[in-house]
Amino acid sequence: MASRSTQILEAAARVIARRGVRGLRVEELATEAGVSTGLIYYHFKDRTGILRHTLEFINDRAERYTSTEDPDAEPLGPREELEQVLLLELQDTPEVRENSSAWGELQASAVFDPVLREDLARATLQWVQEVAVLLGQVRPLASPASLASAAERLTALIQGLSMRWLSGSLGIEHARALVTEAIEVEVAGLRQQ
Amino acid sequence: MASRSTQILEAAARVIARRGVRGLRVEELATEAGVSTGLIYYHFKDRTGILRHTLEFINDRAERYTSTEDPDAEPLGPREELEQVLLLELQDTPEVRENSSAWGELQASAVFDPVLREDLARATLQWVQEVAVLLGQVRPLASPASLASAAERLTALIQGLSMRWLSGSLGIEHARALVTEAIEVEVAGLRQQ
DNA sequence: TCAGCTTGACTGAAAATTCAGTCAATGTCA
DNA sequence: TGACATTGACTGAATTTTCAGTCAAGCTGA
Picture 1 (cartoon, each protein chain N blue to C red):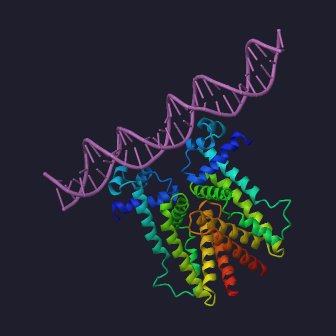
Picture 2 (cartoon, rainbow over the protein chains, first blue to last red):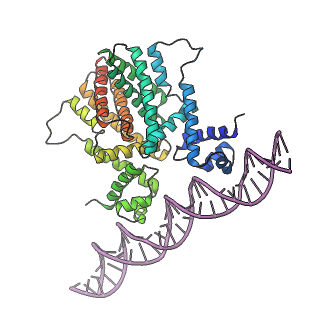
Picture 3 (tube, chains in turn green, red, blue, cyan):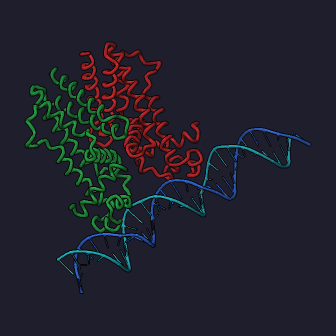
C-alpha cells in the first residue's frame, strides 16, 4: 500500500488537475486524500511545501510516461519517435491531464512569480533540445539553428494546444491531428535547407 | 472621458497583468481605479462578473490594436496583412504586454473555471477564423479545412510563445522571428493542396 | 507503555460582499 | 423662478465568508 504521504501527493495531483495550483484548498485536499487537515501539516510544513512536493512528484511521474525506453516496444524510426514524444503530452489519461494541467499552471504562475522562472526555463530548454535532437535524426542535413527553431515552435504549439484542450475548447483528437500535421509541415520546411 | 465602468475595467486589466487573475484583490482594484470597493459591486455583480467583463474588454481592445484599417497606411498584400495581424500580439508595448498577460491568465484560469470558458472559446474561435480568412487570401486555392487547421496552429503557437515571452524565457525578437518562419512554413504547406 | 500517527474543532487574518447613507444632478409644479 | 422631490452614482465602514495553519486529545502497534 502506498504510504500516507504518497496518498496525499496523489490526491494533490488530482486536486491540482481539477482546481489548479492556485485553486488548491488544503481542506479539499484532505477530503480527497481521505485524511484530516492536521495530518497534511504533520507531513508537510505548509501549503508551499505541499505544492513543492507535489510538483516534484508529478515531474517524476512524467519522466516515467515520457520515457520511450520500453524494452518490449519494437524500435521506432526517427519520425515515429518524434511523433510519439510530442503526442505523449496530448493524451486523455488522468495522469497526463494532471501533468499538463499542473505544467500549464506552473507556466502561468511563473509570469507573476520570478522564483518559478528559473526551474521552468530549464525544463523548457531541456524539452526543446530533446525535440531538436529528434528532428535532427529525421533531417540530418538541416542546420542546427533551423532544427532549434522548429523544435521551439513545435513545443510552444503543443503548450498552446494543451491549454485549449484543457479549457475544453479543443477536442483531444483534433489537437493530436494538428500536431501531426505540424510535424509534417515543419519537417517539410527543414527539407528546403 | 472614459465612463466609470471603463475606468474600472482598464484598472482591472492592469491589475490582472500585474498580479494575475488569482492575485486580483477587489480592494487593490478599487485603489488602482481610484474608486471605492462598493462602486465595483454596484457596476459588476461580483468578482467573477469583474473577470468576465474584463475578458470582454480586453478582447475588444485587442481588436482595436489588431485592426489594420489605418487610413494612412499603404494597402498591404495579403501576406503582409497576415504577418502584421499575427505579430501584433507579440510587441513589447505596455498595452500589448498587458493584454497578452491578462489574456494568458484568463486562459489559464478558464481551465479551472467553467464560467470563463464559454467567453474564451468564443473569442478564440473568432481569432482563428480571422486568421483563416487571411490565410485564404494568401492561398486562395487551399481547402477551407486546411486553412482552418493552419490558422489553429498559428494562433495556438502565438499563445504558447506569448507565455514563454511573458515568463521571461524567450526574447520578443526571437519570438517574432519564430512566428514569421511559422507563417512561411504553414503557407508553404498550404501550397501543396 | 510510549512514540509516532491521526483527528477535527478552533483561531485569526485576509478577503469578498453588503448596506445605510451622502451628494450632485435633474425633474416638477406652484 | 425657486422650493421640494426623485434618481442613481458613489462611499467606506460593517459584516460575512473563506482559508491556512494550530492544538489538545485520541488511537495504534510494537
